[in-house]
Length: 336
Image 1 (cartoon, rainbow, N blue to C red):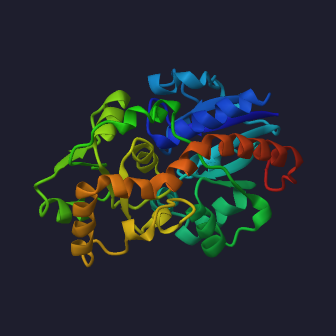
Image 2 (tube, helix red, strand yellow):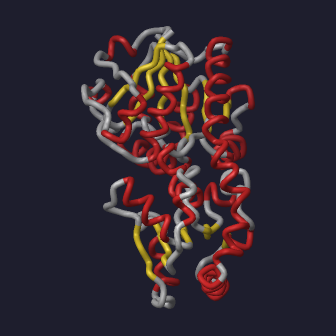
Image 3 (cartoon, rainbow, N blue to C red):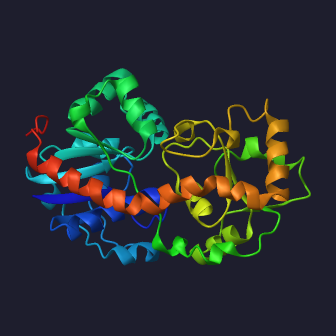
């Protein structure tokens, strides 16, 4: 039995890193696992493996990658698809299929696109086809687990929790005790329009976007800041809030997606807001208080940082459970 972990080539975001983490851990546990680099577009050539080296950030995982689609299309192949690879799921027939819910929101967007691209298939028909083709589901967040049960009614025996962990590089916590400045960091790709409502009324603070930075520059910026704010959609358990927290930032979020779940973003509700516009004054008030009384607020995030420190061990445990499930699972939906 061989494992193939699907990921886009030459893409260094959180989802592809998680894919490499799984491949690494499977190999460490004695499995034969390969990265399957391939694009997400919709022509038959685009299901083919792409022969590229992993990006520099992922070379530490020491993974191999598959070169031939014939190796993938075998009855003893376990192919792990991130949720946006709907076209590949439809075109690969022989392999056993595992769907990894790294992002609920990305699946919703992708399924809407594919239902329009495949003109002979409605959105309802596509959803039925997709879920009828999947043998086993992995969820990266409790948000995804909850969505699968409430919206799709997937049974517990077909769902396993398999989250992720942030890189070891972020864990030099002694350095995170540096003198803090009145800096607020944020991801400009997530919830910027909501955040700008607050930013324009608090010009006395330094607002630093976490973009166009090397990994070392990201870490050093976080270690100078007092606060990280994220008003994005939280389609899964995002990495930047955890990276910021472990490097000494207080955290403020909304209650969208995974941020609505205590298990995914385990911070006090005083730092989570339902409606940014309606609660803008409350948000401004707590930002002021964090800036003035950082030493008090940062202690309230110790529980969150403890969770983050444990995530790698939990991931290793969950991969072992996944291997056991694969070896004992009753595979039913693979087709000729």
